[in-house]
Length: 218
Ligand code: GRF
Image (cartoon, rainbow, N blue to C red):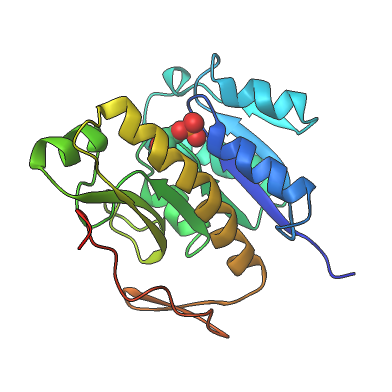
């Protein structure tokens, strides 16, 4: 059997994406193992989930560092010491510096709860509702120096309903996040993601998606 990809996961919050990745590693749908979970938040539910799964985890609290670069150096060292090959940001509520980007160039993924490039940043479910968009969704992308700007790996489209609230929309988007993040990781672990500028090609390609989604329906 070939060696499993060693994942690092960084999370600040409840950790449902982390849980999806843990579950898919355990059931064999992802050929990877989580080598280390790091949170900047001592109270993160993600740390509890990691402990419950018997994973190595660390809290590296950003409040103990005087600069973003110093913080990132500590995180990078922990990831390197654990032999991490791919870093997955899973609700990690911090911007990362060039220190981090250089250490893991092309090997950092993020999940964002909107259809990028629409609605980068924070509170994006509310922004999609306020804008009157008919669809939102979620995006897994490689991380570059911008905020939610890196090359897009996979997206799921979620229709917005007239009676949606920020919470109901966030919940439906989250369900899709839990499907597409493991898929992106698995494609990476299989060596199938080829990045060419902004475009990420999947080789060999998957079956094409349906021609269109229409909301409200025709
Ligand atoms: C998700 O919506 C993710 O897209 C965003 O932060 C949220 C984290 O949720 N980056 P969880 O901690 O994985 O439950």
